[in-house]
Length: 281
Length: 255
Ligand SMILES: Nc1ncnc2c1ncn2[C@@H]1O[C@H](COP(=O)(O)OP(=O)(O)O)[C@@H](O)[C@H]1O
Ligand SMILES: [Mg+2]
Image 1 (cartoon, rainbow over the protein chains, first blue to last red):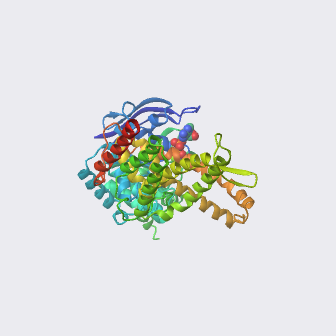
Image 2: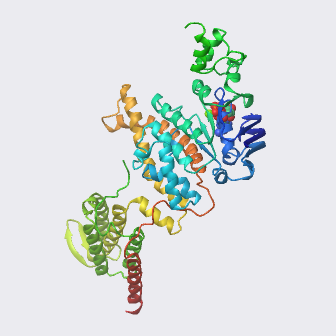
């Protein structure tokens, strides 16, 4: 089943001369794990925000084409309506704290209170989200009193409690230390295992190659490629689009070692080991 | 957690009262001396307020505020006592100055009213968690947006102060003088405002988006995670206060 359909999406921020998204089209199936990559300012964040209706509803600006999420055309629904289907997590864990709640537990309830969810259902959902993101031990702490990785997992839990079928994460680990990043990546994998459709914009290509079913490569607001990681990372023109392939791919490319019977280079450690193993390394 | 709220945790009858009742009491303290201008009534009100502060065991916390208020009131008393137009009855002379009874009585009237209102506000502020007050008001129909702004200010300002501290530490570690006399401190403080304010503005946009996607502008009715706090005798206290005000009005008109 098609979960997301984007058709000829064009978008220009107010007061800006240039299209931030230029004729973007793609389709995503239920349960897929999609990576969004591209150099800085290539339009990753704008695309992420277009999935939840922040583009265009929050910014206004000039909008053309269609984004259809689970049958809803984003342009015609409010952000609150769309938030029942898609959730988004931003870079900075700190700015996602509402600042009006005393504990982690209450913080996660914020969205549910706004949606008018009954108290019994709220408690069920909060407990589910706390456990899935492994932050139940901190539930009575102040939201400001957490490490970066814990705070970001709380932000994810706050979205997960709203039971979206799709979650969009815009560089969720870029402001975290290595340990915090690792916690968050593990949490995102757990979400995907729950059957949630995941869209992740991220610069850590090794992780992207490991997790993603397909990768969307953006440059200058346009889709350059949308394919499985081996195909995207085996492109010869990756560098021209400001992206580095995973280190395993770069090594195998340098040694000209392709995956057996294909035209693609390995993208993960295991694949690389399998290919290079034949060299007696 | 750090907080800018003056709320002091104590286990007393006053703390357990409905925040709305405390708002009613502020109304009472404002209106009664206006309805019944006799200085005796004001004194009774002041004594009542002080008793409440003592019962709530927060009297100590009020001392800095009251000292400031007394300082201002002292100047009012001196100026009115000496120079109020219509001063006639001499109380006593000192040097070239004469203190008059009319001005002094007027100034005492003002002083008691001010102390009365200040104590009523102190009862509210010192014995009520800001979030409890706002939650009561939102449940009574205050816009939840306004409620959000009030509560988040109480939490986010201390966070801004701690980010200010982080930046100060960074500057000190680079050899900038951040302590010493007022001038050095101002010099150290001003360059901080840029990053802190710009940072807060950028954060504001992101926080606004994060709130949006959590249904902040949802049109439907809201629910609450926490059960509504049940305050005992709220209705009795609030009707009692209203009745008191009504009686004062009746007294003023009839007697
Ligand atoms: N709030 C904004 N107002 C105007 N232009 C913006 C805004 N945010 C991003 N842009 C522009 O949109 C383009 C895409 O930016 P963005 O989506 O943030 O890219 P990325 O997330 O890949 O770094 C850039 O040219 C950027 O300058
Ligand atoms: Mg971005």
